[in-house]
Image (tube, rainbow, N blue to C red; front, side, top):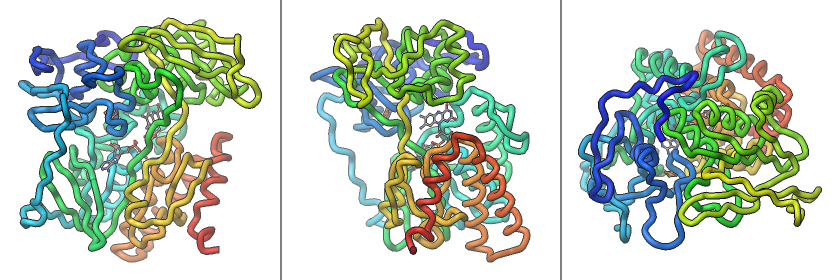
Amino acid sequence: MRIREHPILDFTRGPPLKFTFNGNILEGYPNESVLAALWANGIKSLKKGGPPQGPFCQIGYCSGCMARVNGRPRVRTCLEPVSEGLIVEIEEEPLPPKVTHEAEEGKAEIIETDVMVVGSGPAGISAAIAARGEGLRVDVFERHFRPGGQLVKQTHKFFGSGKLFGGQRGFQIARRLIQDANSLGVRIHTRAPVIGWFKEGFFAVAAQDRLVLVKPRTVIVSTGAVERFLPFPGNTLPGVMGAGAAQTLMNEYGVKPGNRAVVVGAGNVGLIVAYQLLQAGVEVAAVVEVMKEIGGWLVHAAKLRRRGIPILTSHTVIRAEGKNSVERVIVSQVNDKFEPIPGTEKTFEADLLLLAVGLTPEARLLAEMGARMVWTSELGGYVPYRNKYMETSIPGVFVAGDASGIEEATTAILTGRIAGYSAAINILGPRDELLRKREEAIRELEAARMTPFSTKVLKGVGKVMLSELQA
Ligand SMILES: Cc1cc2nc3c(=O)[nH]c(=O)nc-3n(C[C@H](O)[C@H](O)[C@H](O)COP(=O)(O)OP(=O)(O)OC[C@H]3O[C@@H](n4cnc5c(N)ncnc54)[C@H](O)[C@@H]3O)c2cc1C
Ligand code: FES
């Protein structure tokens, strides 16, 4: 299942690493997740007994990839890097995670910083660069073993000006942002999930099995988004996954997610991922879309149509079937109420069913901290109220990127910059030059939101302004 040739990505691999899975020796490669290495070796489920169940998200949210790793129970293998000699086992009966009392015993490491950034996607890294550029101490905490968020798996070229990375591909932009952050002296802590917050102003970070307490002067939450799921029979079968999860496997690790796919959703992500599947050597049987019209850019749809891929509008998935994993996908036409019309079913032989049905903001940390949240369908779900400087209802706590509402990477970079400058102003005071830089970022954000796709977002943003809460 490993991709050897790709029109855009180079998957030249060094010498393999050997690790064991349930006592069998398997091969993986440096910078590969354990889950990707298992998938490349044909292992699609880590569940013992009961109906087969596969991983859905590949980024730490669904728990469909948990295994025992070097004796540690319930490890999310999608967030764990392969290493030589690693021992991975399916858990017969998951042991409860070990509770440590390091904090009580005074053993926890304590990090004091000016700006704590949670999440290292384009929003978080841009925020960190802006704040660090003003001379502040900046610590970024990222739960994955590599920084960059979802940008590292994006292979398409970005629109927009050169100043905003126009013409560059997502993974190139991610590399550049991380280089800039490192050269400025931003401290990026990977494998460091922020797991909680205490009223006293501390944050708990489960850093590689050791507890770290962080005491920041300001906080920027840029935790990104989660892919949505759909209810239908067979939706937990291995081979059903988020479109972003397939991107992770093929674009990040060079592993084919399957051999023949059905993609649900003809928004930009569904259309782009369908094309990326073709680039990775995966056949695409069909793209199905419940709405009457294709939601994404028609230029992306045209690329698929030229390759003969049917895009079935007014259709949805009704079932996935297979013994141990997906073997076929049944779709059906829908009526005006989006109900399947009996007798219109079509069956596609496929081992992969990708759901590209939208994203939901991941802002639970802010909710836990007591930030005022509001359901805003235009922005994808629960998001915090904020002002135009990205400050939430908690003074000194900022939000950026998809955690503030689903958009895309360019706006994530800009909201990140605004949040970074705002955090700096919070600490250093309203210096003229800093205020000027923040205003420029706000103007750039307004310009970036002038596409036809931004109308909905702008409506949502209007609803979540702090002034609306106070009115
Ligand atoms: C799976 C997926 C695929 C996508 N594919 C595309 C695409 O192809 N094209 C496109 O234009 N847009 C795509 N997007 C949209 C994408 O969200 C934006 O382009 C952009 O990456 C958003 O940037 P961000 O920094 O807000 O979030 P992200 O890039 O999602 O970064 C958030 C980071 O926060 C980390 N994190 C989350 N919680 C914690 C915590 N508690 N502690 C520490 N770290 C944490 C995550 O691991 C992640 O690295 C995709 C989104 C997802 C979720
Ligand atoms: S949590 Fe690892 S695949 Fe979802």
